Length: 206
Image (tube, rainbow, N blue to C red; front, side, top):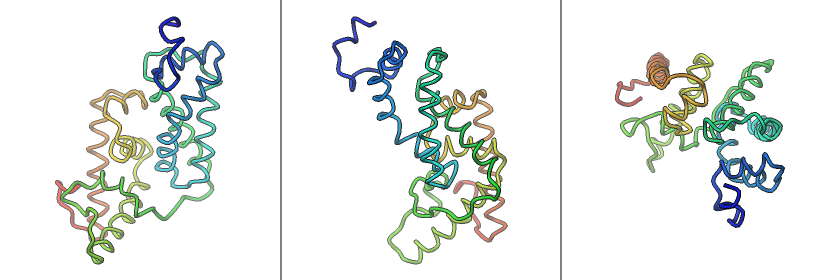
């Protein structure tokens, strides 16, 4: 494989090619991996932590840990799911170490629309609709925070970050059927939470 990839520019190499090069001591190859995946890793950390400063730290630590563990990467999963796994673990450790829970929400984050279906409170130019959407989103973020660690992490990966059930299964080390059940259960609990706060969403809306 070395002969096939030696003359190709870094941007054209696959993640696995770059990992192979990095394992042989090519720091430029690992730097390309970082540039390629840093935005999605940072986005995941922000969604997990809801704190941008902590997310920056976790993102940096993710790639440090990955670099230190390169020799142990066996290639059974894609490198980016490996990065995701490290990010999830570091984020959960950060949350557990907090003295107080984070509150508030980035109610203007359009990715939260992924949790609410098109029948729910989507973006609108109507000011009253915008205000209503913010209320739903703040309540939604509070509800997500109240989920169990397992349900919350799965929901973030699948519904907010857009990972497939297969990817989430690899990141979390659980069968795809379990991932599907967790997403279903997380949505059910969120519907209950929102209903208790006066947001009447039918099952098709969440």
